Image (cartoon, rainbow, N blue to C red; front, side, top):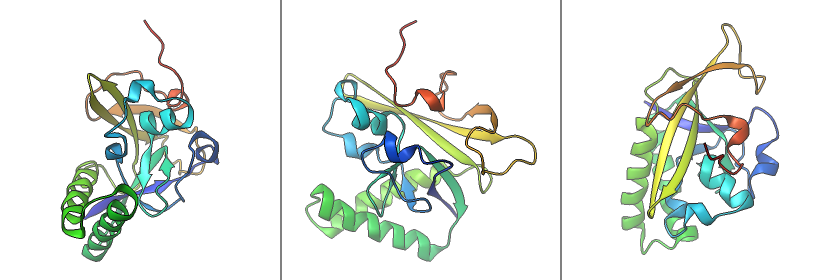
Amino acid sequence: MKLLRTIALDPSDTFVFDVAAEPGEWAVSGAFRFWDCDGAKLEGKARAAFRGGFLGVQSWGWSTLAQIVPATADDYHGLVDLLARQLVDRFGAPDMTAAKTAAEEEVAFAQSLCSHPISSLIAVHRTSSDGEVRESFRRLQLREGQGHSKAFSFIEMEDDVEPDGDLRLADLGREPTVR
Protein backbone atom coordinates (compact mmCIF):
# COMPACT_ATOMS: atom_id res chain seq x y z
CA MET A 1 0.00 0.00 0.00
CA LYS A 2 1.15 3.55 -0.74
CA LEU A 3 -0.03 6.91 0.57
CA LEU A 4 1.06 10.54 0.31
CA ARG A 5 3.14 12.53 2.79
CA THR A 6 3.96 16.21 2.67
CA ILE A 7 7.52 17.14 1.81
CA ALA A 8 9.39 20.44 2.04
CA LEU A 9 12.38 20.78 -0.27
CA ASP A 10 12.94 24.34 0.88
CA PRO A 11 11.18 26.78 3.26
CA SER A 12 8.98 28.33 0.55
CA ASP A 13 5.73 26.76 1.78
CA THR A 14 6.06 28.76 5.00
CA PHE A 15 5.60 32.02 3.10
CA VAL A 16 3.47 30.79 0.19
CA PHE A 17 0.64 29.44 2.39
CA ASP A 18 -1.15 30.86 5.43
CA VAL A 19 -0.36 27.62 7.27
CA ALA A 20 2.34 25.35 5.91
CA ALA A 21 2.05 21.63 6.54
CA GLU A 22 4.79 20.03 8.59
CA PRO A 23 7.10 17.89 6.45
CA GLY A 24 6.20 14.21 6.70
CA GLU A 25 2.49 14.59 7.52
CA TRP A 26 -0.04 12.36 5.83
CA ALA A 27 -1.47 14.28 2.89
CA VAL A 28 -4.64 14.31 0.81
CA SER A 29 -5.64 16.51 -2.10
CA GLY A 30 -7.68 18.80 0.14
CA ALA A 31 -9.83 20.24 -2.64
CA PHE A 32 -12.86 19.78 -0.36
CA ARG A 33 -11.56 22.73 1.69
CA PHE A 34 -12.72 24.96 -1.18
CA TRP A 35 -16.21 23.52 -1.70
CA ASP A 36 -17.89 26.79 -0.75
CA CYS A 37 -15.43 29.18 -2.46
CA ASP A 38 -15.12 30.52 -5.95
CA GLY A 39 -11.50 29.61 -6.68
CA ALA A 40 -11.30 32.33 -9.33
CA LYS A 41 -12.01 34.99 -6.69
CA LEU A 42 -9.48 33.83 -4.10
CA GLU A 43 -6.44 36.02 -3.55
CA GLY A 44 -3.01 35.79 -2.00
CA LYS A 45 -2.17 32.82 0.16
CA ALA A 46 -5.67 31.33 -0.07
CA ARG A 47 -5.31 31.40 -3.86
CA ALA A 48 -1.91 29.70 -3.63
CA ALA A 49 -3.39 26.92 -1.48
CA PHE A 50 -6.28 26.50 -3.89
CA ARG A 51 -4.12 26.44 -7.00
CA GLY A 52 -1.32 24.19 -5.79
CA GLY A 53 -1.57 22.80 -2.27
CA PHE A 54 -1.85 19.33 -0.77
CA LEU A 55 -3.53 19.29 2.63
CA GLY A 56 -1.45 18.07 5.57
CA VAL A 57 -4.03 16.19 7.61
CA GLN A 58 -2.47 16.75 11.04
CA SER A 59 -1.73 20.50 10.82
CA TRP A 60 -4.51 21.36 8.36
CA GLY A 61 -1.76 23.25 6.52
CA TRP A 62 -0.62 23.12 2.90
CA SER A 63 2.33 21.65 1.05
CA THR A 64 3.33 22.35 -2.55
CA LEU A 65 4.50 18.77 -3.03
CA ALA A 66 3.55 15.35 -1.74
CA GLN A 67 5.74 12.26 -1.80
CA ILE A 68 4.57 8.72 -2.43
CA VAL A 69 5.57 6.56 0.54
CA PRO A 70 4.97 2.97 1.61
CA ALA A 71 2.16 2.54 4.15
CA THR A 72 0.65 -0.18 6.28
CA ALA A 73 -2.99 -0.99 6.95
CA ASP A 74 -2.53 0.66 10.37
CA ASP A 75 -1.25 3.83 8.65
CA TYR A 76 -4.29 3.81 6.36
CA HIS A 77 -6.76 3.39 9.23
CA GLY A 78 -4.95 5.99 11.34
CA LEU A 79 -5.11 8.48 8.45
CA VAL A 80 -8.82 7.85 7.89
CA ASP A 81 -9.53 8.28 11.60
CA LEU A 82 -7.43 11.46 11.85
CA LEU A 83 -9.06 13.00 8.77
CA ALA A 84 -12.53 12.06 10.06
CA ARG A 85 -11.78 13.77 13.41
CA GLN A 86 -10.52 16.84 11.55
CA LEU A 87 -13.68 16.90 9.40
CA VAL A 88 -15.82 16.97 12.54
CA ASP A 89 -13.66 19.41 14.50
CA ARG A 90 -12.57 21.81 11.77
CA PHE A 91 -15.08 21.37 8.97
CA GLY A 92 -18.35 20.80 10.81
CA ALA A 93 -19.17 17.25 9.70
CA PRO A 94 -22.40 16.21 11.47
CA ASP A 95 -20.94 13.09 13.12
CA MET A 96 -18.03 10.63 13.00
CA THR A 97 -19.94 8.16 10.80
CA ALA A 98 -20.47 10.71 8.04
CA ALA A 99 -16.96 12.09 8.51
CA LYS A 100 -15.40 8.63 8.29
CA THR A 101 -17.22 7.92 5.03
CA ALA A 102 -15.96 11.21 3.57
CA ALA A 103 -12.44 10.57 4.92
CA GLU A 104 -12.35 7.10 3.35
CA GLU A 105 -13.29 8.62 -0.02
CA GLU A 106 -10.62 11.31 0.27
CA VAL A 107 -7.93 8.81 1.28
CA ALA A 108 -8.96 6.45 -1.55
CA PHE A 109 -8.50 9.34 -3.97
CA ALA A 110 -5.06 10.07 -2.51
CA GLN A 111 -4.18 6.39 -2.95
CA SER A 112 -5.21 6.58 -6.60
CA LEU A 113 -2.44 9.15 -7.09
CA CYS A 114 0.17 6.68 -5.83
CA SER A 115 0.55 4.55 -8.95
CA HIS A 116 4.15 5.73 -9.40
CA PRO A 117 7.23 4.38 -7.61
CA ILE A 118 7.91 5.05 -3.92
CA SER A 119 9.60 8.45 -3.36
CA SER A 120 8.01 10.02 -6.46
CA LEU A 121 6.95 13.61 -5.93
CA ILE A 122 3.48 14.77 -6.97
CA ALA A 123 2.31 18.33 -7.67
CA VAL A 124 -1.29 19.48 -8.02
CA HIS A 125 -2.80 22.28 -10.07
CA ARG A 126 -6.42 23.36 -9.48
CA THR A 127 -8.68 25.59 -11.47
CA SER A 128 -12.27 26.66 -10.98
CA SER A 129 -14.83 27.06 -13.73
CA ASP A 130 -18.62 27.33 -13.49
CA GLY A 131 -18.54 26.31 -9.84
CA GLU A 132 -16.50 23.16 -10.47
CA VAL A 133 -13.01 22.54 -9.17
CA ARG A 134 -10.75 20.75 -11.61
CA GLU A 135 -7.48 19.15 -10.48
CA SER A 136 -4.54 17.93 -12.51
CA PHE A 137 -1.59 16.09 -11.02
CA ARG A 138 2.00 15.76 -12.19
CA ARG A 139 4.78 13.45 -11.18
CA LEU A 140 8.08 15.27 -11.03
CA GLN A 141 11.08 13.42 -12.41
CA LEU A 142 14.47 13.73 -10.75
CA ARG A 143 17.71 13.84 -12.64
CA GLU A 144 19.50 10.51 -12.81
CA GLY A 145 21.02 9.74 -9.40
CA GLN A 146 19.66 12.94 -7.82
CA GLY A 147 17.95 12.84 -4.42
CA HIS A 148 15.23 15.17 -3.13
CA SER A 149 17.73 17.45 -1.43
CA LYS A 150 17.50 20.31 -3.94
CA ALA A 151 14.19 21.89 -4.85
CA PHE A 152 15.18 22.70 -8.40
CA SER A 153 17.00 19.56 -9.53
CA PHE A 154 14.05 18.42 -11.63
CA ILE A 155 14.39 18.21 -15.38
CA GLU A 156 11.07 16.90 -16.64
CA MET A 157 7.40 16.67 -15.79
CA GLU A 158 5.14 13.83 -16.79
CA ASP A 159 1.45 14.50 -17.29
CA ASP A 160 -0.69 12.08 -15.31
CA VAL A 161 -4.20 13.49 -15.24
CA GLU A 162 -5.73 16.17 -17.44
CA PRO A 163 -2.44 17.29 -19.02
CA ASP A 164 -2.22 20.94 -19.90
CA GLY A 165 1.53 21.04 -20.47
CA ASP A 166 2.31 24.36 -18.82
CA LEU A 167 2.52 23.77 -15.07
CA ARG A 168 5.53 25.41 -13.43
CA LEU A 169 6.10 25.19 -9.68
CA ALA A 170 7.21 28.82 -9.58
CA ASP A 171 3.85 29.89 -11.02
CA LEU A 172 1.52 28.01 -8.67
CA GLY A 173 0.75 31.08 -6.54
CA ARG A 174 0.66 33.63 -9.37
CA GLU A 175 -2.12 34.95 -11.54
CA PRO A 176 -2.55 32.96 -14.76
CA THR A 177 -1.32 34.57 -17.94
CA VAL A 178 -3.70 34.98 -20.84
CA ARG A 179 -2.48 33.61 -24.16
